[in-house]
Image 1 (cartoon, each protein chain N blue to C red):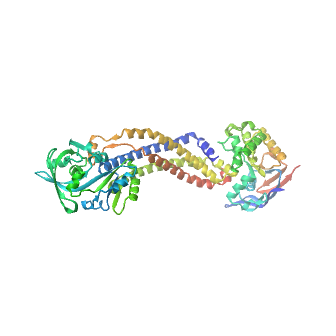
Image 2 (image 1 turned 135 degrees about the horizontal axis):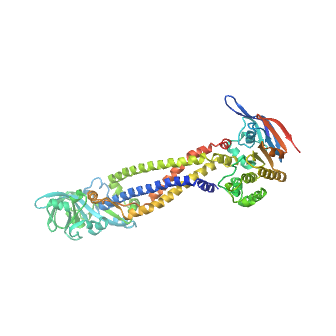
Image 3 (image 1 turned 90 degrees about the vertical axis):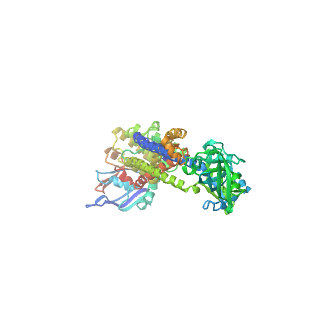
Length: 405
Length: 227
């Protein structure tokens, strides 16, 4: 009965209902679009940064992340392989051995980061082959090195030239080696472009005197959103005293912080928008109860509990809001889908600036259902809050006074 | 058997000069009465009716309805008491505008959580009794004032109350509608022994009442029972 009454009551003044519904409609549509663009840009940013190098989850020897030296490497036993292959979300565990060295040509030398990696697996995780600008992609079993373009310029070396690496290996052994350059890769980030050297994993292990050892496994996930579950499962399966399992949020806290602060700004804007809408709804509800005092008086006089009356008015607010929310969400969907498949591109000059940080200057929307659900719930919460004051007024109704208005 | 007893009730509105709307009224209304409380405007008849109906509380005195002192009940208890014991007909705009005649009559029974079958039967029976069996699905805006008041009477009777209180039920009706409404109420009173108490200054109602209580300045100045 309350539902029927509430539903019919909202159509007593169609124009007012449509105006209120319209304000909710536009607020929800705008909010979904804004949030979707914002979240989409974060997803893209995370995808760019995380899949660029670190991966969503990494496994190291306990203590490696705080002190990234070869002495904190671990033996590549089948334990980790077994643990990761038992998880359906993990497509591949990509092994790496990383450390610093000095790269030299016959005229100069530069500090560099040597990454020993499995060429195929590394390519699947980071798309490394796409960054190749000259020569051939490095291969397992080959003695060739692939170096970053910036480093090659500094060393004045090109494809076919010989790169000399000198450094300190596992347990302080001297590390030295000569490697023919087979290819050049280009990174957007100047820091990486001036530093990176890729060697096939076994060559890097030999170079550092760390045969059979790794500094990390970067995990390639079938669904990046599962990273938390993967970390949780791995922590159960692996000895936590021996290994540290970290997700990208732990490895890149500055990125998380940047996203959180930006997201906070967006949410404040949404909050302002919703407060404005809430006041509009509040005005409507106040009018709705002010003009129906006599009716409320009659209803309580004949035996309707005030609690039920307040619920009825609350339902009216919720119905109007719900219609605004549903239509607003539906109306936002084509825009969200359009920008998902046709992301906003910021232009060539911005693209260059973004590339410096290893990011693409495109902003797709996010299709995360949480965005739609959150906006709907937020407006509903406001609707419920807006109903509190009228509910208090209804609870104070005196039928005699009400019927004299 | 008494259904309504008031013992020396007062209703005083405070102010620089306090107003005694009801000033020491004691009445005893028995089952099956068809009583009119009359008097000029401001005589306190509506206030008295509101107190009897549990819509208002006396400043002092006792109001005993169906052997229960309702002046001691809380506001929530009074709502429940009204729901199960009293039928109301007000002067105008009695009905819920968004409900049909049938739904308006059914409304109080729904609040009482009566079964659907019982509701349907009672609604049909009452709307037939007030001559509106064919207007069941009309909303108040599609009915005349007289028809609306007849629906209000049907609603008041739907939960089978001990008595019906009607506050100036004919104030906005023409003579034909008034006559029809009074005929219906008189017949229900005679056939089903339902007690009706009116507050009115409509001579047409007064002429049909079997007992007339006259108020002036909140006091009973006459109480006449006619055969």
